[in-house]
Image (tube, rainbow, N blue to C red; front, side, top):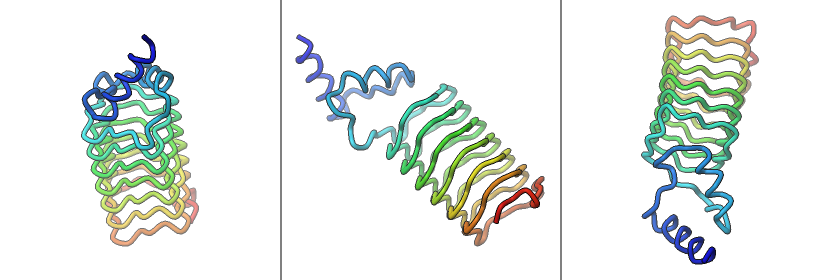
Length: 182
């Protein structure tokens, strides 16, 4: 009986008929990872509405979250390395110790977010909006920040070594550039 349920669940997940994340409950994600014989190579959460949920200690490396609504979320110790977050909405989200190495964030919206102890090494952030965002102790080394908008943001103790700033906007930012690493 267990193998029939497992096979049925796996087929529903593969065909997209069952979207385990409609509930957006992190416990449901953990349960599904335990029952699936193998984790899908790429978890597709594109266009998902996950706002106001708390995702903590979840591994979403290489996940497709393109155009997902993550506004108001608490993202704590989340692994999003290599994830596709193009056009994702992180407005008012709290990112603490989030790893976004090699993530695709082109056109993402992080307005009024709080970003602390997070890693954006090699992230593609062209055209990303970070208006009114608090950014502290985070690593943007080698990130592509071309045309990113940091207007009205507060930036302290961040590493921007070898980042691409071409066309980026920094109007009315509060910063301590002495605490930035270039």
